[in-house]
Figure 1 (tube, helix red, strand yellow):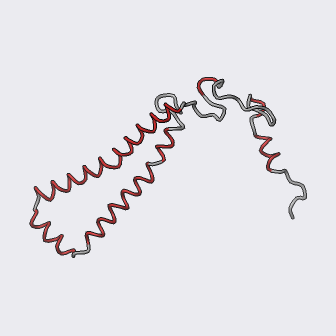
Figure 2 (tube, helix red, strand yellow):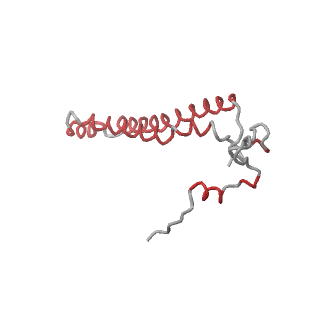
Figure 3 (cartoon, one colour):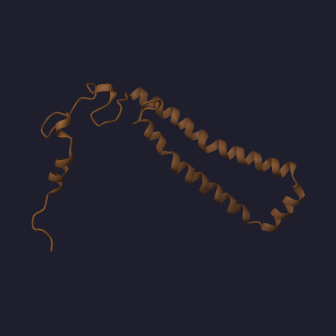
Length: 138
């Protein structure tokens, strides 16, 4: 049913590896990051020293904070304006009709929304330490 001979994974990977394209071969020293052309390291990623990584991390944490808070603040202000300047008596009657436990439902939806936003945006912090921002980084 199955062929008795097979190609080991190491041999299959060796067929597709770019050994002849200037990459280090087995048993040789890896290419030094400082000697890489055009600021690209041996691993193919842009070379960044620790100061650049720390700076990028700090900027990205600020952007992450803004992306998580600004939309929620805007949404709260819009909801407050509608409740304050709209038919507030009508809104209050409908809110009271929901019951006392409805607040937990909305608090849970808020926490879930924040969690999803955080989990989707948090990897940007680590990405900023690997890939430089700006034109030509891709």
